Image (cartoon, rainbow, N blue to C red; front, side, top):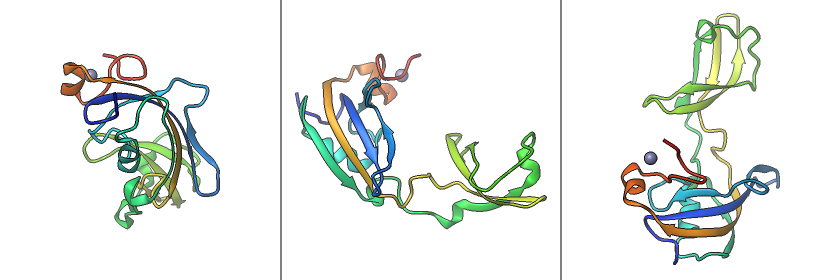
Length: 161
Ligand code: ZN
């Protein structure tokens, strides 16, 4: 079987930035399972894996427009210090989990802080970064009807209900 729409694919991946720093890796852990063709992984990686088979290995550089995009200046904003109840010492570089407009979790990074105001950047930490992926395909199977209706993988490496 080859990777195509509605396949459940397990991959081993190793992600580095252009300086060779490791951003994320599944080496020594469970492989990542994802449902192919529904945008569950970044577009550039999904298209690089299209048509590949078990044991195939790929090594690709993915530009920001096929990964996490470019920085949106509109996502840098000042919020009242009072929004950070219970946090005593806010420093530039600190990261917090926040709720995005449609309820999804997103990471915001503190740019600067005054006693009354905190400037945060809600861009994804990997905007503007060209990503290098080394990926090995571990397994491929057909998605179940239930997985297709949920739009994600169940079982090992996937969601549990
Ligand atoms: Zn589900």
